[in-house]
Amino acid sequence: MAVSLIVLLFFIVAFYTSLKYKFIHFRAFKETRKILIKEKNKSSYSSFLVSLAAHIGTGNIVGISTALIYGGPGSLFWMWVFTVFSSVFSLIENTVAQIYKVKIDGETRGGASFYIHQGLGNRFLAVLFSVFFLLTNTVFFQPLQVNTISESLVHVFKIDRLILMLSLFLFAYFVIFKGTERIVRFCERIVPVMSVGYIGVAVAVILANIKHFPGVLLLIIREAFNPKALFSGFSSSALIIGFKRSLFSNEAGLGTGPSVSAMAEPRKPLGQGFVQVVGVFVDTVVICSLTGFMLLLYGFDYGAFRGVDLIFRFYEEILGRFGTFLCLFFLLSFAGATVVSQYYLGESNLLFMVRKSRKKNLFITLYKLFFLLGIAIGVNLSTKEIFGFVDQGMIFLGCINLYALYRLRNDFRKEIKNYYNGENDGLLTGKPA
Image 1 (cartoon, rainbow, N blue to C red):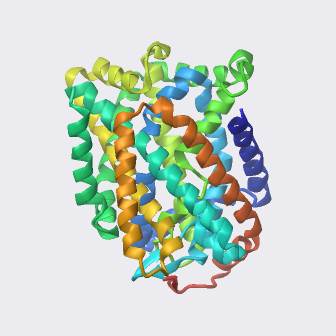
Image 2: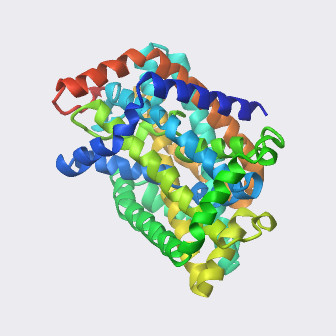
């Protein structure tokens, strides 16, 4: 109940902030096109893909099926509404992250903990954010992705969980623990393939059933305003479940994304904010929606299934045995990319705390072991046991982050003025740590 109330407050603040800044985040597509295509900013493109990898996880597939199970079709509508307004937080936090990023061992690092410390001058709050981020990200959120990998492979191959856990340890060693360059390279290769592939399959399914598509849209809108779905239990209402699905899918305003966008070197800070807003749109309005459309078009009794089982049943129904392996590919790609990028997010928050310590490398090694513990938890626990902790941890991070963004609002306003007045044209490469 407390989490649901705070999510509702998030929406109210997002609505007010959008009005306050005259919906400036709606300019994101125009500005992103200029940055990524005309200016050909490679660093912005790379950070965009790593950020997508962090957010386009199993929540975009399994999470949507769960939303339909508990909130009904109307939850998709409220997911869209929340995203329209909350994406302004992504613009603000990723812009501010560019201002307060630093250089650590030749790499640009930044994020919420950095702008809380440098912008507010509050190291205690910054450390508190980093500690909670490491706990939530490594012990609770990451295991959700790993659990989907585990459940998917067990579903298809009946693989032993011990063998699976050891295989994931090897994956972590060869892909995740080999440095930022390998993480970026992995995301640059896997994210376009998995995203375009998933969107392509979804569009094909919709086109094959196009005559039923208007009915699905009407169903979503009708159920969104159905009094029973809207008010039957506050926390289980279509409105709150849709709001939560949006918030926990794209994480706009929670302070998790800026750690990735800080690696970019845009011409102006606000430009990177615009790029990340497009990522929020792709994550939630495109991919989450397509999952919902596909499931609703085929009219499954989704209340009779668990999240992963429903997705597999859907693909098996439309494509047979091939559908099983295609579904497995999407789930493994989405979850794997998220796990890889989540390591980078955690490492950035750790480096904020220990970057000046002579034992920095020891702390990083301990974090890697901690990360492996998260993998072990994900393989052996069910998502139901983990979800509650994730919601509470992420909401706590969001409260700290929104407080910081409010305090740093003048920095954001200054960057809006700089962006449109042609100031600050030089590359921003970060301050020395």
